Length: 199
Image 1 (cartoon, rainbow, N blue to C red):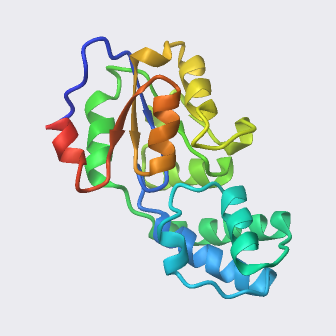
Image 2 (cartoon, rainbow, N blue to C red; image 1 turned 90 degrees about the vertical axis):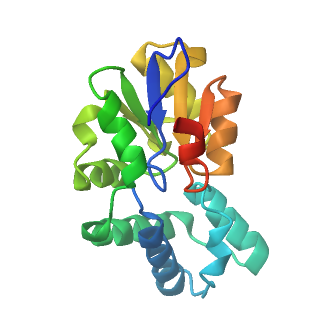
Image 3 (cartoon, rainbow, N blue to C red; image 1 turned 120 degrees about the vertical axis):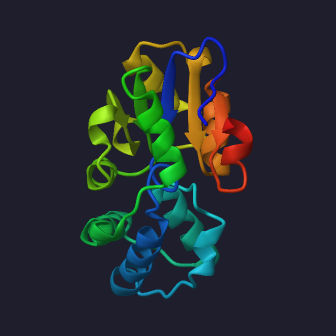
């Protein structure tokens, strides 16, 4: 596992759903925050097709579909706190973390996530891999979330590597689109494709 194209100079990883299996924690935190701070109950299934959405994208979609106006700052704060409170339950996505460990010290690596810095950094620490990444780029560092290429372009810039020489590992359509828009080789790490790409 771990073959890379000739000329690869850096690896960039999404965090939630790629490096860590944090999506169940996010789901619980979102549902709690929306109920207690937003006064709406949302079916868990609503989130399943929106796994690559940033917080603002989730809130905008909820407002449109449910016909409500939500206090974005209050709900984001509550959701982030809810995720952080549950991080003792977070697990590493083993096949992807094996790739990280295989290439640690051999290629520079970064994380590029539409999540908040507090949650992303804490998630990486929780599964014991924060120290292998030269830089971590989050939604707090850019104006536009995925599928815009901004996160990946900033990660490449911080690593000092041209985008065309970066390989990205992602688990969502938005993230894959962002990586391709940045001119990078995008690998889908969802269970049904990770081994097809990397064996």
